[in-house]
Length: 481
Image 1 (spheres, rainbow, N blue to C red):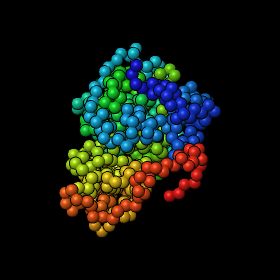
Image 2: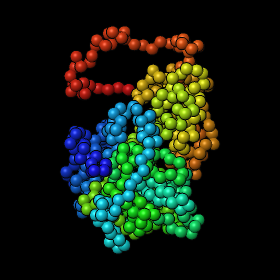
Image 3: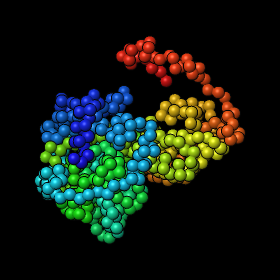
Image 4: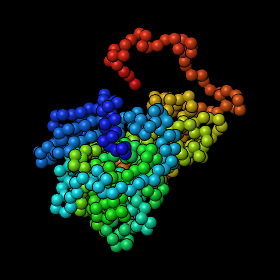
């Protein structure tokens, strides 16, 4: 059986039932489900949430359950990729994406997503439990829909996670970033004088959705990268409207088909985006929906917009792998890369083995071009815990002097969702800080730097906290920062 959303949930139910929060009470798709996610996120608790009785905006109970918080836990996300230690995501993710597995095509009668097929007036997107997330959002937004289109010059498909405002039963907004491959395809279709064919698929195995977010060249299909992360070929099926010219995962939960009409822009937003701020209203293309196919008992995959669920696997994992691959090739002393939730894709921590002068600044210069969302790079030594932000800040405090260690680059292209950038929001300042201690003065010699406080090793090994306090009591002790 192919890996998909259902096989993943079944595995969790069987092997890790404690990570699932099953909500049997009715919950409104407008705000209530997102409110629960937000409160859990504030507590740094990330169960997979299954809402069995979502209530639609018209007050009716949806026929389809919602699963959300699917990609919030870093450890669960790593395990979904077959990576046992989340600290090795940057290295191992990159290797899996590089080991591409070509997709296979199946017939329509073998495709679960074709169990129900609706055309024209029968289509009603509002019957699906699509969430409204933040208080200024104009309505329900699909946040987990992978917009699939093609480069008309080559026929090569592209998948991209884009925000989709469901305006009515058969019309949506659709905001592709100006620099995205999806937007490049739109312009090409429109320059031909044609509407762009489009399909939006929702619901797949976490490894699959992560692969569809891989940072690839243009034009380049995401389906082989998905296969690399899944460890098996993605099963594809042709769309109803466009046949084999536009393929979608056969075991997705829902597929929306339509066109992006030429030169049509409508107001879209405001929308609470991943930086944690409400993004402004802006002109955006639209999708005219003409067909929808889905499993008869489809599960709607929602997302906690701007929360860990939105950041960890759907953005940070692919970004870590991309940075590691690029920077390691330029600076071999690079050891690891971590994109933390706290920086919301604007911050990246890079760990190096400081064998020679200049490594920190080399890493900063190599990292910044990897992605327009990267704003600040922090480079730390091998003795720091890259995944402990106290260690990062300690490095900033005691291993940097900003007159010599800060790199700033003005006039850079930046991602337009940063509210600190003046309108129109595509040019800003990026940079980094070298938080590393000086290298050894010679090969094989120790560093000339202050020694770090520590208990003698033999004492540290002998004293174990669990010998003095049980886990339940420990969990209730107060914390500090």
